[in-house]
Length: 625
Image 1: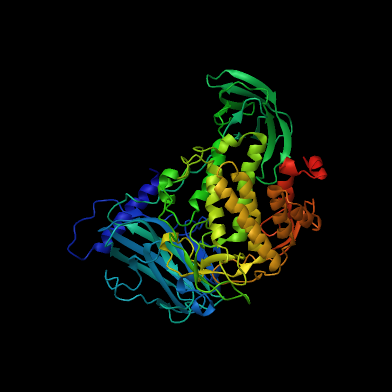
Image 2: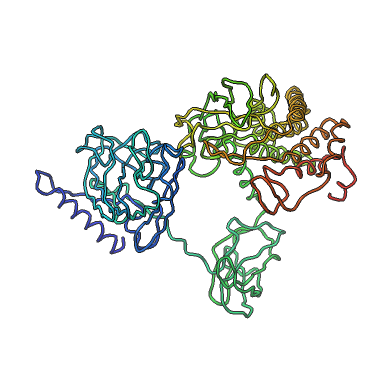
């Protein structure tokens, strides 16, 4: 233990003894432990402390003069379409609280305007508290009122409490936001600058849960591929050296024998890292083994491997595992999680019965009442499920399988290759995951009325979901937004594509997908201009799109490939997107973005599918290929 750390431990123990003096207490014989990762911000680092905005709350922050400085841009709150004072939060997560342990809480807060704040230690969902600012002794049920503070007043708090229960994952949070059910008026007006300093949460009973900082990474002066190299492929490393002349280097095997020699090539200053970089090329070394590189300037790399073990395959399956972890309507189990802290990422089922109330907004709607839209993938932390964003994700996944089948490597996605619950059902695992979203998208169809077979645009919470709230802990009512032409054509295109990839695997399902694809395409033709607004801030992102000519082209392409029917080819030829792949995107939420497609610009997806399917090749496709 470093001298400073030992001194700090001793100081904490002495301080704790002083705090407890005056009563009939036993001497404190154990070390006290600091639970926080940052206390005084003197090193210009704020994390693990961070701000959190929900609803319509908005903040800026900076670390300045040894303080965490927050500016309230908008306090949020119910009167602005938000929820309550927790729309603006300053918090520290990753704390472990032990029942019966005594804790010391210290902090300093200085606002530029008078107001009030609420601070508490409790669970991440916000419904269980170990301690809060107005508890009377240890009576947590006394009151949940905020604390008043004057303009430019520095409130210095130093107190102790005994935890009444244990909590493996807790947070210390300050609520600084707007009005609501539990808050009469805003905590602080917009423009208020709030400074935090000298934060501390000390376990006076034990040091077993002290904050453990991440080890500082000591970078080697020769930087190699972090995963390793393949035999027979290009192999390069980077030497950090400001000399412009060539520098000798050698590669040593595990026994220290030199097996390759070369000279560096100076590449100049690297703009991203700010380092003077030399390139070391040892592509001529192909013998599998473990190696290090040494240079004549004394620099040395860490050990690395050369082999053909397929070490990068884990990246593919870990990436696909993201979709399993984002499933709605099913428990996410640790045994199916392939990377990270599998126990922390596992969670109970979110919205296992997702019945959403149909909204009569945007000037039109589908049926009234509610609709079962259980399943699918969550789009983000707000627990929304969006057809147009799910559509491009689903298309890419199905295209991934179709491409693998074209080049003869579909076995990479065979049953049993991915860690998902369906990996023993005799169907390709990649298609199993895609089907989870396809099934949900087909649940989004309007069932009857004038808009039958149109597709509802999205489903999400009635108000913005609080960030970092687990789906199973989400108490808000669910709403489903009206049908749109864009959403309808997304379902048509993806269902037509699904009909192709499932043919010969599950013909019944393929036929159902094709039926849905045709019905939704015809429905979109009947209602070609039902648009989601570009601005819609209630509960979820708008995903507005007022030009769906690209969606019509995409769906026509997918239907033509699957059916070969000339009517769909005629629709393709009448489109300005016919066999065109753009290099820039404009309109909707994209303005001058470089690229060929995104969720709102999907014409190129149709052309990519056409060029992948030989039976419908149109002459320019052979040139593209």
